[in-house]
Length: 204
Image (tube, rainbow, N blue to C red; front, side, top):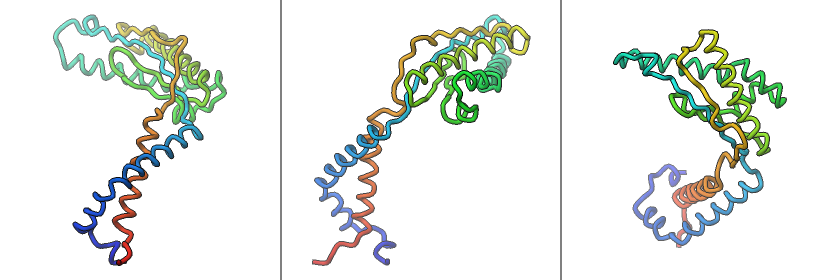
């Protein structure tokens, strides 16, 4: 017990460095284990749709008023973010794909780049076609709902939206194989280091 609680000595660190062959082999074994997990329990497919959001600052605030422009962007971005995850939009997707809303919000859908220019709508699913269809439907439902809110006067009239990538979407794994290889290697080596440092060697 005292050996476990004692800080590693210089001899322990030297022993770690001398075992370089073990570390190389451990890294390879860890990577193989990570690859095995990747192919046995693969991550979900991910598709990305893109909506171009143009706030038209020059028209909304023609004068040089940086502070007002900042609050304008923040306010309108927040409104659009709320629309992207609104009950109306999520309800449409839930009905179309028979997926509970809580799963859509918590697991399958992710929104990135909530600012001016391209907004990326990510959808994850075990089926690649479902992931692509879900991302496409989400982006199009978002645009339709946002445009309706613009016409209703709830969003600034100068905001323009266009689904620039929502058809024939490609898919890829949400986590690449390289991530599993790295995690396997690092995980194995971390356990090995603790094993070497905290398991007392037999006295010669």
